Image 1: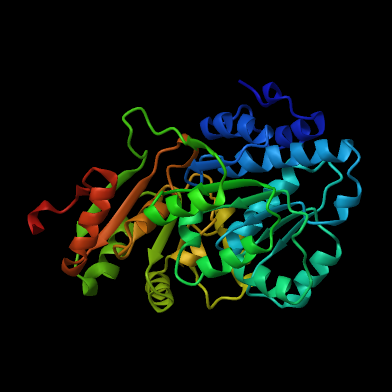
Image 2: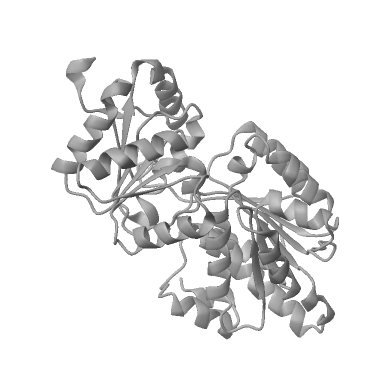
Length: 378
């Protein structure tokens, strides 16, 4: 199957081909035909499966169809809204819309927290038809009267499980209350906890459910290993790995911003180049570091969960968890950074005695145990 089989406009096909995409991924094969028909959809898919294109491409096609039917007045209104949990993911989604719609007369805007609101007011003055936003900043701009959402015909809630983190669900509901009743709703989530399922029932109307295909054995295509190491020794164990093992690139997760800086400093002291990103870093600095990492100018990135959302790196060979997340779904998101688009990857976790309960919860969620790398310590 090729993208032309969906009946897409040639201008969109050109944008897809420019990204060197040969054929749709499994999630795209399932989602694109449904969304082209205007149906609501709930999808279970991690990043790396092609899910952004799965909703971006049909959105562009459907808006183009509306334009050709003579609805030119709406071109000055936000007609498609995508909510994303972090600035990095919002930027990434906006870039993909730009790529696929490069040959269309369709404006895309991206707004997020962490920068001066004046910057986003300028974005909105350009009257984007497609708006990608983080919930908090969007609510602020709506309340100030800088953006109106009454013409939104397509609404996407991406990474819904992360949206439901404390502090976000209220903002998401505030945005939804501003939308017209008649619209197409699209929800994507890497995991489907009860809260996401409940939200899907209230938000979507008779949705089609799709799920990214798993590997032939039904498991995540990432080698998952765990070392039982107490907290004081974790950094030393990390340095041993970095000095002795071959790797393409490594994303290291820490629970806190303070620990991210501490781990990064220890790696630098060992004369291994790396950078750290977290919520205390300004947006321009974070984007610069991410670009260095994407271009493989640095091979090691230390990050907190919130800063790492939306990171899309080709051939990321390893993810290392300096701690075990207390929310099992967070672990799934972390290891989803590697083993993307059918490639292999390795996820290594350092687990202290007081984190073993969280490890058991992760293994229960996956229905499998992680490979223990130091059996003699058990």
